Length: 464
Image (spheres, rainbow, N blue to C red):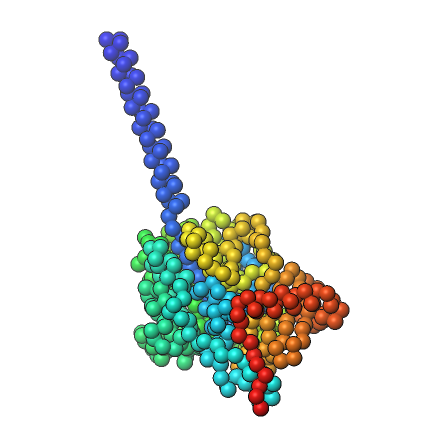
């Protein structure tokens, strides 16, 4: 009996050990499954949001608590750039990972006489107003990988309906069309891809509602969604209760209370979307990126200390906010001063989705994962190409390169150059081109080589 008892004890102990070991293996396997679940991706892009239009960027008047909280939970990039100083080229660049010069989308819509000053000496090149269906978009890459894809807001990459987001890889399109700005921010919106719902409701709130609904319905699936708000682009309209708190507070950082109300509406929408990630218990496996398509329009906002604004190759036209929260990768409340550009977001998203081969197909961007973990990326310079006059007709068509702390701007009208030390002259007031001749020549040659490599279209002398 003793022997039988011992054997029985051993058998039971062995069973317990087996069960325990099996449980550990199952736990490890399940943990690995959770870890390997595809990352959700939320890309929020404001329209014409200036580098200084957020409290976390140093604005002393505007209050943006939700966006500030996002910055505190991830990494804030102090030297982030839009691919262009106007919207459509940047949007196309993010969708394809291609620089606007390579993509041949270099103007916000079709270039035409409405942009050209009478005294111009050059003729800007043609620019495609459409993102070609032959281009493989970020959404198409992710859709093929099993992601549910949703687009909410401003598209502006094709007037014809067959070029809208639903034909470029998005399962859902709410609000995306050929419009550069909404006819109005209040329902009835008169936006062909956005059915009217409640008269008087505010557009940015509506887009947040639609985004939250998409998150709720697809929370069990990998999802990629773009909330590309129309705010704070013209027309300047905001809910009265949001603008009211900025009445009488005009000064450095704010030009008018309605613009302040638009920023408040943007912040409210971002906060609601981020809260929905928490409520649906997917925030810990969702990459969130927040940025702008170009610098703030100086007619609406105060870009100080940056020079000029939208439509210019000075910092005010191209430097933008960029916040990234990548759970398990980015460090909370961190900042990084490495110069980065819109196409890097394409590569970063594909990297996060585990699409290495697709990421390698991005010709003009690098994944920002190394920066998010405290490492560095290997790149000597970033480039810009805006060979057009902007809507205000006061800029000069040109191209630019930033390498280290220096930035060179090349002008197409007279082949002149401007060189600035951004570390010591962020306002770009001291042109060093005549003093730093060797550096100027080097950067100029790098820029011209890049323009040649990308087959960039450049202005030609105007025939009189």
